[in-house]
Length: 91
Image (cartoon, rainbow, N blue to C red; front, side, top):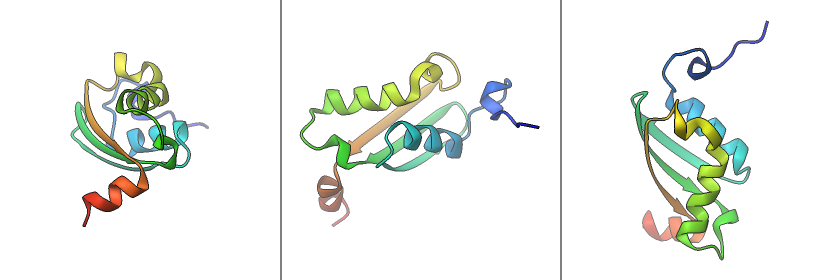
């Protein structure tokens, strides 16, 4: 029997589910997500963001999320970084 994620069966989206969805859509990404089922904050680090504007990076994240932003995810704030940019952030 296949178990559907809670958000597909009417339950709240969980941070780890959101993390997996973003990672599946941006395979090289390292994703950190915090949230309470309705509101989430994410940090996404990926080589795929190199050479792209912030708008293009955010479009990549929204593409990975697909229709979830229309329902299961009510509020998401996120920051995107290349590994080099992230390295400067954590110094």
